[in-house]
Length: 356
Image (cartoon, rainbow, N blue to C red; front, side, top):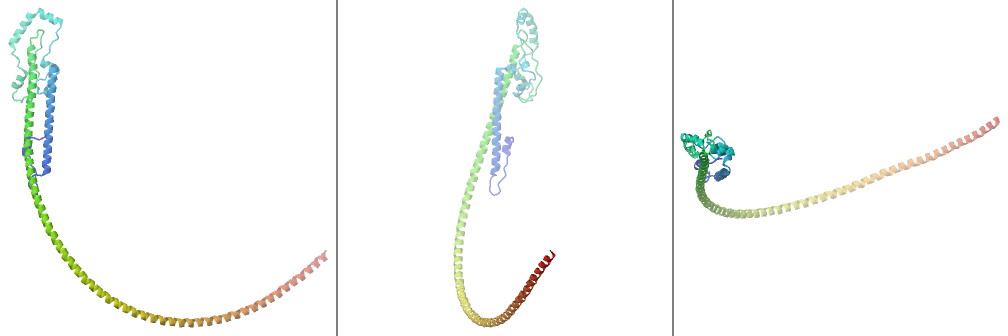
């Protein structure tokens, strides 16, 4: 943004909430804007100086080739014609023009004399720019129609007027250049002085604020250290007391648990011995009963097995006798069948022989 002296004077910063002074970030941002604006103004001043120097060199080297736009940039906006119309147009000098000038010198003098008497001396461009329009500041007058510039005839009677016009243009350009340079230097000096004052005020205020912060910080640190040491001692004393109480309570509880454990262990041992005796007695009784029952069961089982064995032996003998009888009968039957077959075979042979 573009800064003005009023902005520097009327700038207000937000105040801090918990400490006196201005917000540091807001002050830094404003100083950054001031630095940027100063740099822009300095660069713009240097660019203007370079443009003025370039225009001066161009005027010195080629005064007749200066365009109207360049005249406007230089602050000479009172001429709307070309550079040739401002500086004058000279007719080319030839042999015919020289001869005519020698033949008719008197006629030209008679012709020029009344014109010179009737026409007043043309004011310079600088005087016309300054006095003709006093309501406009120098260099801001709007463009006006080009003034009538008389062309130079063969005798060169208007050479002085043309020279005075060119001199006025150069003088006006030089004056505008000096004015802009002086204004730029004054503005720069004012900004620099005001910036130095503001910087000194900010530095002094910052040093005061820093000293206040340092003092406040040291006091706060001392208070925190003292409070921390007091709290630490209280915590240490309280911790030692609590530790002693816990140790005493732990020892008492440990003794109680040991006595109770020993008593419970004795009770458990007595009960275990009693149960062991009962279990052993019961086991012996059950073992004897089981042995007796096993012997009884064994005798019964052996008797049953003996009876079954006798039955099986009887059945085996019966089956053996049956098998022996069956085999004898089967043998007799088979032998009878074989004998029958043998007897039938011989009869068939006899029958077959008889037929033959």
